[in-house]
Image (cartoon, rainbow, N blue to C red; front, side, top):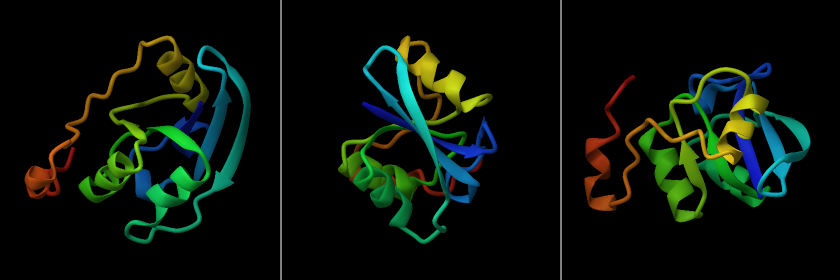
Length: 121
């Protein structure tokens, strides 16, 4: 299972699309086996979620995320965990221990998607 964190340095980024890099944590479901850092390839609508899913991401950790990105992740069966702060590796470890739950409002139903786009945290 690959858990990816949107990061500024080694800290989880406050905003997904504008992060400096993505840290991919390869895990066996209980612990982190390896990590690799990939610079943010650029913020284009709809590009990043597909890029990350294509690279094996199954869980994305971020501070905040726009509704459009959340929708694409949902379509790609990537779990979105927002409201994450602090060190990215520690956040991934917390997720593996079941201690990290999303604090964001994730829209599962597309007909309500328009209600989620305008919220700023």
